[in-house]
Image 1 (spheres, rainbow, N blue to C red):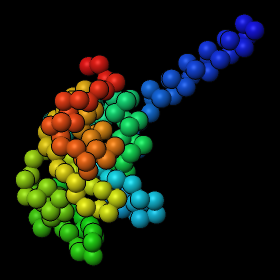
Image 2 (cartoon, helix red, strand yellow; image 1 turned 90 degrees about the horizontal axis):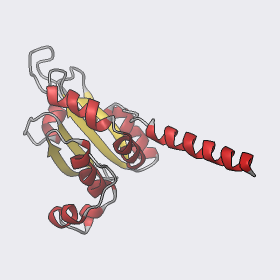
Image 3 (cartoon, one colour; image 1 turned 30 degrees about the horizontal axis):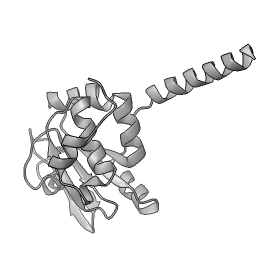
Image 4 (cartoon, rainbow, N blue to C red; image 1 turned 90 degrees about the vertical axis):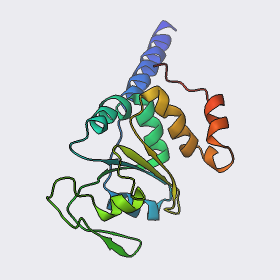
Length: 176
Protein backbone atom coordinates (compact mmCIF):
# COMPACT_ATOMS: atom_id res chain seq x y z
CA UNK A 1 0.00 0.00 0.00
CA UNK A 2 2.85 2.38 0.84
CA UNK A 3 4.50 1.69 -2.51
CA UNK A 4 1.27 2.53 -4.39
CA UNK A 5 0.97 5.75 -2.39
CA UNK A 6 4.62 6.63 -3.10
CA UNK A 7 4.19 5.87 -6.79
CA UNK A 8 1.11 8.10 -6.94
CA UNK A 9 2.94 10.88 -5.11
CA UNK A 10 5.89 10.69 -7.52
CA UNK A 11 3.56 10.73 -10.54
CA UNK A 12 1.71 13.79 -9.23
CA UNK A 13 5.01 15.56 -8.55
CA UNK A 14 6.28 14.83 -12.05
CA UNK A 15 3.07 16.05 -13.67
CA UNK A 16 3.37 19.28 -11.68
CA UNK A 17 6.95 19.70 -12.86
CA UNK A 18 5.91 19.14 -16.47
CA UNK A 19 3.16 21.78 -16.17
CA UNK A 20 5.63 24.23 -14.63
CA UNK A 21 8.08 23.65 -17.48
CA UNK A 22 5.57 24.41 -20.24
CA UNK A 23 6.88 27.09 -22.54
CA UNK A 24 5.34 29.04 -25.37
CA UNK A 25 6.02 27.60 -28.79
CA UNK A 26 6.28 30.79 -30.82
CA UNK A 27 5.29 30.64 -34.48
CA UNK A 28 5.98 32.99 -37.32
CA UNK A 29 2.95 34.82 -38.71
CA UNK A 30 2.66 32.71 -41.85
CA UNK A 31 2.73 29.40 -39.95
CA UNK A 32 0.09 30.58 -37.49
CA UNK A 33 -2.22 31.55 -40.36
CA UNK A 34 -1.71 28.13 -41.98
CA UNK A 35 -2.42 26.32 -38.70
CA UNK A 36 -5.45 28.50 -38.08
CA UNK A 37 -6.88 27.52 -41.48
CA UNK A 38 -6.49 23.82 -40.64
CA UNK A 39 -7.67 24.07 -37.03
CA UNK A 40 -9.36 27.39 -36.15
CA UNK A 41 -8.09 28.96 -32.95
CA UNK A 42 -7.54 32.53 -31.78
CA UNK A 43 -4.22 34.13 -32.66
CA UNK A 44 -2.05 36.19 -30.33
CA UNK A 45 0.64 38.39 -31.88
CA UNK A 46 3.47 39.81 -29.83
CA UNK A 47 4.57 42.85 -31.83
CA UNK A 48 8.14 43.63 -30.83
CA UNK A 49 11.42 45.10 -32.01
CA UNK A 50 14.99 43.99 -31.30
CA UNK A 51 15.83 47.29 -29.59
CA UNK A 52 12.79 47.32 -27.25
CA UNK A 53 13.80 46.77 -23.62
CA UNK A 54 10.20 46.33 -22.42
CA UNK A 55 9.70 43.65 -25.07
CA UNK A 56 12.64 41.71 -23.66
CA UNK A 57 11.33 42.16 -20.12
CA UNK A 58 7.93 40.84 -21.22
CA UNK A 59 9.61 37.74 -22.70
CA UNK A 60 11.76 37.14 -19.63
CA UNK A 61 9.18 37.77 -16.90
CA UNK A 62 5.68 37.35 -18.30
CA UNK A 63 5.78 34.97 -21.25
CA UNK A 64 8.23 32.74 -19.35
CA UNK A 65 5.82 32.41 -16.40
CA UNK A 66 4.53 28.80 -16.43
CA UNK A 67 0.86 29.73 -15.86
CA UNK A 68 0.95 32.37 -18.60
CA UNK A 69 2.75 30.05 -21.02
CA UNK A 70 0.38 27.13 -20.39
CA UNK A 71 -2.79 29.21 -20.82
CA UNK A 72 -1.58 31.09 -23.87
CA UNK A 73 -0.30 27.95 -25.57
CA UNK A 74 -3.65 26.20 -24.98
CA UNK A 75 -5.87 29.06 -26.19
CA UNK A 76 -3.93 30.77 -28.98
CA UNK A 77 -1.56 30.29 -31.84
CA UNK A 78 1.32 32.35 -30.50
CA UNK A 79 3.13 34.64 -32.94
CA UNK A 80 6.30 36.66 -32.53
CA UNK A 81 6.27 39.46 -35.11
CA UNK A 82 9.29 41.72 -35.53
CA UNK A 83 7.68 45.05 -36.42
CA UNK A 84 10.78 45.94 -38.43
CA UNK A 85 11.19 42.68 -40.36
CA UNK A 86 12.54 43.21 -43.88
CA UNK A 87 10.62 40.60 -45.89
CA UNK A 88 7.27 40.49 -47.68
CA UNK A 89 4.24 38.97 -45.95
CA UNK A 90 1.12 37.97 -47.86
CA UNK A 91 -2.03 38.33 -45.76
CA UNK A 92 -5.63 38.51 -46.94
CA UNK A 93 -4.42 38.44 -50.57
CA UNK A 94 -2.28 41.54 -50.07
CA UNK A 95 1.50 41.88 -50.01
CA UNK A 96 2.86 43.81 -47.02
CA UNK A 97 6.47 45.03 -47.06
CA UNK A 98 8.93 47.10 -45.13
CA UNK A 99 9.53 49.96 -47.57
CA UNK A 100 12.91 50.81 -46.07
CA UNK A 101 14.40 47.51 -44.86
CA UNK A 102 17.62 47.98 -42.96
CA UNK A 103 16.86 51.60 -42.15
CA UNK A 104 16.71 52.29 -38.41
CA UNK A 105 13.18 52.03 -36.99
CA UNK A 106 11.51 51.36 -40.32
CA UNK A 107 8.30 49.50 -39.59
CA UNK A 108 6.70 46.79 -41.68
CA UNK A 109 3.39 47.62 -43.38
CA UNK A 110 1.66 44.66 -41.72
CA UNK A 111 2.79 45.90 -38.29
CA UNK A 112 1.39 49.33 -39.19
CA UNK A 113 -1.91 47.81 -40.33
CA UNK A 114 -2.33 45.53 -37.30
CA UNK A 115 -1.45 48.31 -34.86
CA UNK A 116 -3.58 50.82 -36.79
CA UNK A 117 -0.60 53.14 -37.04
CA UNK A 118 -0.04 53.30 -33.28
CA UNK A 119 3.53 52.04 -33.31
CA UNK A 120 4.16 51.21 -29.67
CA UNK A 121 6.26 48.29 -28.45
CA UNK A 122 5.51 45.91 -27.08
CA UNK A 123 1.93 45.66 -28.31
CA UNK A 124 -0.27 42.59 -28.47
CA UNK A 125 -2.87 41.82 -31.09
CA UNK A 126 -5.66 39.42 -30.20
CA UNK A 127 -7.40 37.96 -33.27
CA UNK A 128 -10.46 35.75 -33.38
CA UNK A 129 -10.85 32.54 -35.35
CA UNK A 130 -11.96 34.57 -38.41
CA UNK A 131 -8.66 36.52 -38.36
CA UNK A 132 -10.41 39.70 -37.25
CA UNK A 133 -8.72 41.90 -34.69
CA UNK A 134 -10.48 41.70 -31.34
CA UNK A 135 -8.20 44.20 -29.64
CA UNK A 136 -4.72 45.70 -29.57
CA UNK A 137 -3.21 45.98 -26.11
CA UNK A 138 0.03 47.98 -25.73
CA UNK A 139 2.67 47.95 -23.01
CA UNK A 140 4.50 45.79 -20.52
CA UNK A 141 2.47 43.67 -18.08
CA UNK A 142 3.87 41.67 -15.18
CA UNK A 143 2.37 38.14 -15.03
CA UNK A 144 -0.31 38.97 -12.42
CA UNK A 145 -1.53 41.93 -14.51
CA UNK A 146 -1.41 40.02 -17.81
CA UNK A 147 -3.40 37.05 -16.47
CA UNK A 148 -6.83 38.75 -16.59
CA UNK A 149 -6.08 40.21 -20.03
CA UNK A 150 -5.20 36.83 -21.57
CA UNK A 151 -8.19 35.17 -19.89
CA UNK A 152 -10.58 37.89 -21.06
CA UNK A 153 -9.73 37.23 -24.70
CA UNK A 154 -8.85 33.53 -24.43
CA UNK A 155 -12.09 32.57 -22.69
CA UNK A 156 -14.25 34.63 -25.05
CA UNK A 157 -15.53 36.80 -22.17
CA UNK A 158 -14.94 39.87 -24.38
CA UNK A 159 -17.98 38.80 -26.43
CA UNK A 160 -20.46 39.21 -23.57
CA UNK A 161 -18.86 41.31 -20.84
CA UNK A 162 -17.20 44.72 -20.67
CA UNK A 163 -13.54 44.72 -19.62
CA UNK A 164 -14.25 46.96 -16.61
CA UNK A 165 -16.72 44.47 -15.14
CA UNK A 166 -14.63 41.43 -16.04
CA UNK A 167 -11.38 42.79 -14.62
CA UNK A 168 -12.90 43.71 -11.26
CA UNK A 169 -14.40 40.24 -10.73
CA UNK A 170 -11.49 38.19 -12.15
CA UNK A 171 -9.89 35.73 -9.75
CA UNK A 172 -6.57 34.47 -11.04
CA UNK A 173 -4.05 31.88 -9.91
CA UNK A 174 -0.92 34.03 -10.15
CA UNK A 175 0.12 35.45 -6.79
CA UNK A 176 2.78 37.95 -7.85
